Image (cartoon, rainbow, N blue to C red; front, side, top):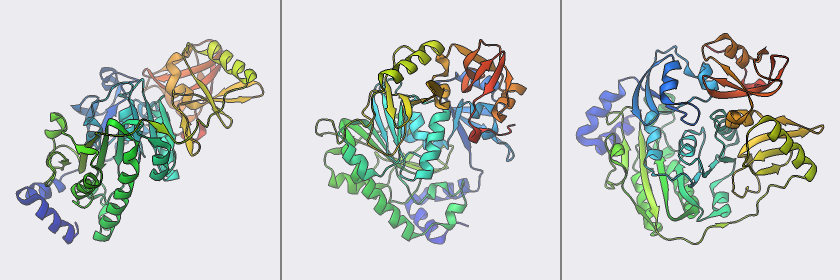
Length: 444
């Protein structure tokens, strides 16, 4: 049962579209995925994926699932071949015209859908993917790792700190702000019991603080993507108007026609957009794209916190890379005991979950490779073991068992239908399993 006060507000906002909203709320919520184009083509993925799909965008597909279907418990999910995301949640990032070398900041990033979506568009750029809540940052890191994102720096800090670290640095700043969640009522009925006007007002106060913090990180000509999954004007149009009144160096800009086709104009701010369950296939979403027209020169409020490797350690790592991979162009950085293949970006001074790709650690004069090295850069390994997503061996691998290997002895990247899923070490035609114990499980 939807709260009466909420319905009164929705009726006032929607007018003659109110009945369309009520009708849509009686229907089942929809599920969608985005195919990881850096690992597999749409065509190859759809040949292997066991569920019915219908295309809704580039690499984006609606799913036709029964209640008992669990797509997260499939080998293709473990291999990072796709990311499950509510279809309307894909739209804010789709509003941006990316260039492949952009610098991007995702300020409230967990569980990672928008960060991963943006990262796919900037293969020669860098994304700082930040999450304030540590447990949620752990979830974010797991998804970045599973999807094989090589150019992400994952941080766990507050937006005030981000504003001190980065001044006029980013081409795109994504602010998918914590909200009252009104747009998720159909998908997540538990959110209904948590709704109140007090919570709406609390969220609006927090959103205003976040926006005021992160706006200074946008470079001249860059864009700030503000989005929520709620319908309240206090958190949406009122928030954008308040922000623009206080920040005259930002202006609202239009969105692509593909976004207009599945949204309606914002209330009193038609350049903002609202996604309703009746306007497109999905739940609720609000989005506003704001361009910065003036700013200072880019500036970092810290020095790179990583350290250079010692000559001895550098020689060990170089030999490992040359013996096991075809990687040629790389930058090595070290944070504490972990060695990274890192993007060309100064590493923040603290709260780092990853700074590119975790290559591994040096133990007893040898490299112990990290799981992320295989998921992100497995395609460069000399030894490749290819498994069928529906075969017994991929199930055994995910469960943590040793399996036969047809490669030479040495470190081996394991693939599932062409997607890197992890690694192991081949010894005498047997793969010693290095799939992380925390990820091992019985799958469908």
